[in-house]
Image (cartoon, rainbow, N blue to C red; front, side, top):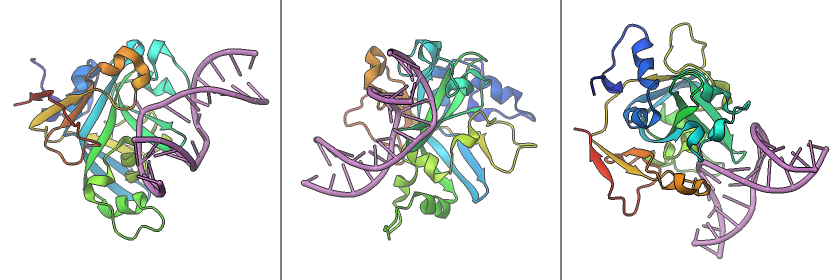
Length: 229
DNA sequence: TGAATGATTTACT
DNA sequence: GTAAATCATTCAA
């Protein structure tokens, strides 16, 4: 435990922060809680604090797209350097965004499942609004799911493979990950929507801020918890 | 070339 | 509680 946490990383460049993401995805995932995801797009800037994530652990994890080392056009970004984005489409409708972890050729990643909106709430409402809806969505419904937050922040595959840690010289449209404030208490649970993965579905590789009202769902009887300080 | 399948969300009963 | 929406991606042929 001699390594500083993601939250306290301060550096002129990005090499130190990137080194954090080069570690095992199971160590990195809970430390992503509290970090801030910022989306700079042509229509404006939106951001949110990460309050829920899941770890997908490369070739041995049957729930991961890279299970068995499957390296395809879709999963290519997961084999790239840590600190980059892996964005994919699910159900032909929704986008999901991950933070690539581990060394190059280790296809492991942290799925971002929920955010607490910080900036650009009006823009999020516009993007998340459905035709016919008159009243705005509750704040807790804007980014409380992996598909919802991608819609709110206008994240799609144009960000696939992009560097989340390098902001200088970046294109106008970019995704950025910044250090933030770690949660007081971290809850764990099995991952959502991967029942097909057999024994791997039982692993408690979902991590969330126990004190946040912005998680995608609060487990009915989750007793697993751990204090962070 | 074609069939099967989702790391989901939303609306509806 | 159940079901529809909707298509990129994968894999078999």
